[in-house]
Length: 306
Image (cartoon, rainbow, N blue to C red; front, side, top):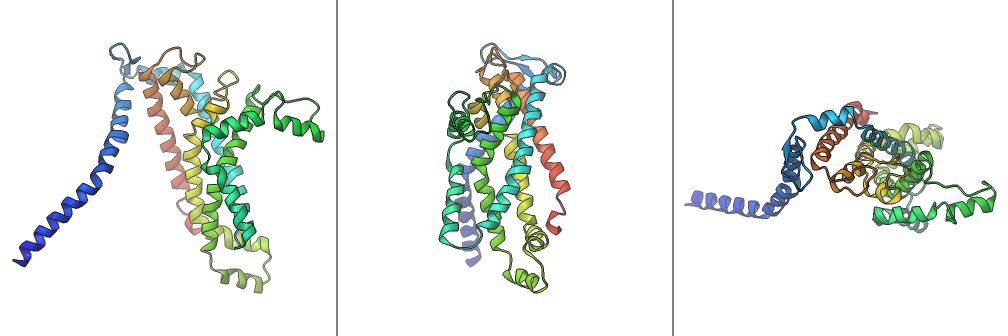
C-alpha cells in the first residue's frame, strides 16, 4: 500500500514538473525551434514574402560566396568590432575593477556610475553618440576645437575608419560596466592571504597583479572573452541606429546586412525583401559565429590552469 502511494506521489510530482516547465518549452518551440526550421527551409528557396516560394537549391549559398562582396565586408566589420571589444574593453574593465575593488562609498558610487550605461537601450546609445559626434556643431568637435587639438570640425561619419571608431567607442561605453562587474566578482573571491604572502616575499603591485590576480581570474576571463566574441559578432541595433551602414554601406555588420535583406529598409542593400537569400546568410552567419566560438573554446581550454 505504501509503495502504491509512493508511485502515485511520483506520478503527481512528474505531472507538476511538466506543467511548470511547459510554458518554457512552448516558448522554446515557438521562438527558437520554429524560427530555426523556418530559416533552414527558406534558405533553399527564392521568396519575397508575396509570390509563392520557388525552390532554388543551393543557389542562394552560391550567390553569397561568389557574388556578394557586401556580405563579406560586413563580416570584416563585425570582426573589427569584436577585436575592439576584446583588446580595448576587456583590459579597460580589468584595470577599473582593480581600482574599484575595495569596499568604500566612493568605489560603490563609481561602480554604479560605470554600470549605468548597460541598462540604457542600445538604440538610445546610438542616438546619443550620433549627436555627440555630429559633424556640424557636435559636442566632441566643439570640445576638440576648444582645446586646440583640431583646427576644423571632423565629419566622423563621412569615412569608414572614423565611423567604425565611433562605433567601437560607443560599444565599449555601453558594455564595459558588465565586464567590470564580472571581474570585481572574481577579484572578491581571491583570498587576501595570497597578496599578504606576496608582500612578505617582496612582490610589488605589478608582480602581484601579473602572478596572482590574472591567473586567479582566468576562469572569469575565459567567460568574458567568449561573451565578447558572441556579443561583438551579433551586434545589431547600435550600428543600425548610429551609422545605418553609412558611408555607402561600408560600416554594415553581419546582422544589419541580413536585417535589410529581410525587411528591405535600405535601397543600397536590397530593393525588395529577399527572405530566401537572407535565410541563407543567416545560416552562414550562425556557422561563422559557432566556428569562432568553438575555436576559442579549444584554444582557451587550458586557461583555467593559466
